[in-house]
Amino acid sequence: MKQFIFAIAAVAACGSAMAAPLKSASVTKVVNDVRISKNSAAAQSATMGQRMTGKSTLLTGRGSRAELTFPDRTVTRIGANSVFRFSSASREMEIERGSFLLNVPKNAGGAKIRTATVTAAITGTTTMMEYSPGQWLKFIVLEGVAKLSNDNGDTINVPPGQMIIMHPNAKNFPRPVVLNIDKLVKTSGLMKRGGFAPLNGAAVDLIAHSVGNQLERRRGGELLPSGIVVRGPGGRIGGNGGDPHGNPRTGVPIGRSVNDSGGGNGGGGGGGGGGATPPSPPPVFPPGNP
Image (tube, rainbow, N blue to C red; front, side, top):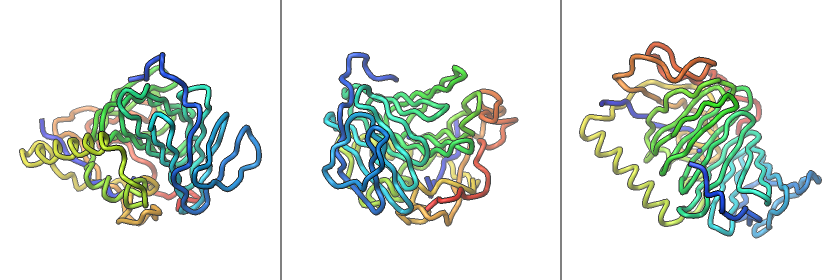
């Protein structure tokens, strides 16, 4: 089956019930304005090597980024204008707004990342997400498979190289769409372009495998450039023309399967309609976007 492929220029199965909670995280990257609040106390500037424990919140400002590394080698990277929380009593994290990359190593026990309406369950997977409450949600899988669920009981598995783009309050998830992993990795402000070190070797190899798989499918004519552009938010995850700060200068080319004859899983603003392109955010940039 032929599919169109994203050429992205802007823009993340549950863990074992026996897995130990993520008791702490170390700050392993600080760029510009990064602050940490513990147990609802006033936020203070983060420093390299600082440990986050208890109920902690990490906040980033304009043009800012941070990285947290957990004892089991789980890595979380937080983009600009974001609010990220984690509790040391669980393996759950929360993104109140903004963007992040989450890499959970194989056999590490998995993790869950929550927004107000959508939860991603991740095991041995590398994902990215951008979330603006009441406006849009973009969820990308670079390698592995992630399971999304919402408050209405709808669920969907997202395979590597695909993205969900939707209104966060939608009742149903739309079909995932294909994106160009190679271009995303090269331009993303949450990867090397943003000053971050490479992910662990296993994740790098698996992402390279996903890239190679897409290349083979393109050469075989199974994946085709779409030429369709979603204009609007998305710069926090991707490079937007190579800018690690995510300045929103370009749109996001997207596509769909040439054999799609219907929409996604349903209505609520989340499903497609009559073979139209996947739902996209409005063509405006939110206040405070870097």
